[in-house]
Length: 250
Image (cartoon, rainbow, N blue to C red; front, side, top):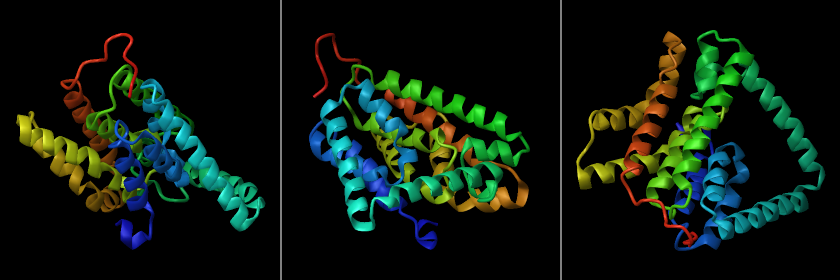
């Protein structure tokens, strides 16, 4: 799906997923990778929440410098007016997301699913904001006073498609990381109830998401994404306890 659309999801997945897996070992490099991932900023909302809650200041500093450097290079290459043009395009993209120009059946967010079911735009957007806030709160709680772990990285990436109203089926490449995390934990400690079924359904979701929504009007994928997030959260809660008072993150 990603290849046929000529999309950048493999690159963004590598930058975010590969970066978050190295937070404790190479924080400065991770920050650079996350800064470069701002080419698709809608998937970085929960990354910022996790880094702030975990006090990963070196990563945050490097990410800010990397993002600003990338923006400066774009201005040098195309002229400073490229940013005013980018803002104009963002406004058009926002309108296309809200009014269905893109096609709600092609998108896999909760917002798009509700719109596909006929929910009014304002209510669907409000429910999307509430979901994003709830996901962000879970991420913040999971990251608070904890060392950054593969499980936390998986939780952030499982939540990334849930937190934004603008996500399409080719963006589900991000789920490679939470899928790998759950599979590895299942092999090590035994699979939980229905975990195998959930993994298989999410793995196949990109293939059936669009044809199912187009032919039946049923937005199944947002529910699968939420299920994936809850599975990762349940696994993560069994990992290392919060750090004792006075021990900052590495």
